[in-house]
Structures are given as structure tokens and as C-alpha cells.
Image (tube, rainbow, N blue to C red):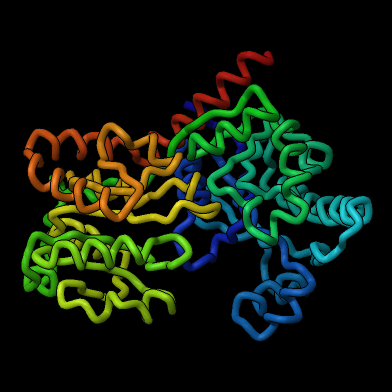
Length: 401
């Protein structure tokens, strides 16, 4: 374990983001034994204009003017920095030398804000944990001079149009200069290994206590109890960019005796799909994260019918841990990331695979298999995930000492 150290977490997501964030969970876990500064992305010029009437931008503009504090305590040993200095919006620049010039200027402004916070908190000999900030992260070693620099990859951002434009060129440089690269996917680990010998798979965590029905009295919701089984269920955002409507329609058409239950908000493609016309498909809508274990408990089979594309091929699906932590037989698409779960899940590709594997999972499920899944899912706590990160850092530190 790493303890009694100062750690600076630089996120591509701000602490006040509405959705869950791996990086926030990791920072909170760091703070149990270390002092931690979580740094939000800085306000950029275009956002300050386009979104100036939003509550979040108004807050940042007040911080920029100095009428509101930029350094805010969150919990014991944990602080949040809203960088007060505006950065220029430069991703429209096509000339790479010009982009790099202004990117370095942005990085310097950003790091100067961090240095002022470091001085206030009296941080020393600090570790940097950079959550995929591949542009501003380019010059962190130069301007902040950390004792150790860790780069964290949890998404293939260079497949995203915004990051792809300059990230394909710049992220490898950042990976090469980092002391250690930690990843939540085997695909990202292999990618990182092209540029450094210190690229490691650390998996991911989830709030295992929330999904542990052996220590919590988790009740199946009434709207789920009313649905005839077997129930084939999914929880999460119904996104047509990530999920296969074709697979879901095929399952529903082929096995009309099964109930397909979908829990979560849906995009336009899902809302307009033929799934809404099928009598054995039930859209239960969005539910609070705290309610998801109750719905999962009522599933006979849990599914994750992902498409295979740039957005999903290496993505670590946190819901798999949640399904397994509750012992549920789980059928999912065989992406590169799902190799990590291959001993505890049923993996297929085609719509036909899904029907065959669901039938198999229903037939062979047992108390022993449920317990094996539960133990594996519950092992993926944030505490264990951060311990894996510590192990990688300590391993590299020992090698370079």
C-alpha cells in the first residue's frame, strides 16, 4: 500500500460531473491513506462563451474573477481545485506546430494554477495520477516535476473525433514519458505496451457493497415482480451506439416465452425501435443508481448486448461486475475487454449466439456457480482496484530506484 503521500489527480471529468466517474472513485480511495488534490479540467474560452449561462460555467467564471474560492475541501485529506485561469480553445488548429505551441502555453497556465494549490496545501514529493488528459498532460513532468507520474487509460479516447485529431499523435508521446501506465482493459494495456515497458492491466472497481445481497436486504421491485419469468434483463443507458437493437429484437422474436426487461434511459433509436411493439419487451425507464441492485436481483439472466465498434471494443463494462457480484448468469458480447471475465460469463457475437447461451445459462445455473460469480464480482472493489494501481507504481519505483 502507498500511504502518507501527497497525490495529485488530474481528471478529464470535473468533480461536479453528474454521472459516475472512475477517477473520482479512485481519488476517494487514495484519500483514505494519503492527501489528495483532485484537479478539474480548466475552463476553456469557447465553453466560457457558449455555456456562460449554465450554473457550472457561472461558478467557474466567479472563480476566475476571484469572487469564489478555487480550492475546496471535499472530505478529510481530499481537496478539489477549480483552475481559475482560462485556457484557449485550440483543437480547431490544423498546423501541428502551432497547436503544440499553444498547447504548451495552456499546459503552463494550468500547471501554474496547480502549483499555487500545491503551495497552499504544502504538498511535497507528490505523485501525479493523470486520468487520460493527453493534451494538458504533455508538459506536466516539465512544469510540476512530480516524484512519480502515472497515466491512466480507461477509454479509447483517440477513437473519439475530438481527441483523435491530435491525440493519435500526442498520446503515445505522453505514454512514453510517463513512469507508469495503468489500464482497465487488456486492449489499452496492449496499446500502451507499444510505447512503454511499464503498461499494466489493473481492472476496475465498483461499489461492491451496494451489490452484495448477502449483507443488504435487497428486495425485488413490484414492477418487476409483476413480469412473468424467465426475465432476461439489462440495466444502463440504452445507447444505439453501444448496444445492439438487432440482438434484443432477435431474442424477443425467437423466444416469446422470455421477458426482456430493459432498465434505463433510451436514446432516439431505441425509442423508435420495434422493441416497443413487442409484448414480451418491457421498458421500465430510468432508475436511481441505488435501485439497480433491486432490479438485477429479479433477473434470471443478465445481459450486455454490446455492439463491437471503436466505442466498445476495449471498454470495461462496469455493469458486468455488478451482475456478477449478485451471482447472476451473465451473457455478453465477446469484446476484447470481456476476455477479463471469460471464466465467469457466457460470451457470444451473433443474435443466434445470445439465444443459445441464454438457454444454456438458464439450464446449468446452480448455487455453486452463483457463489463463484459472486466471489469474483465482489473482488472488484475500488479498494482492490487501487491496491493494484499501488502495486504497479511500487513495482516501477523499485525498478528505477
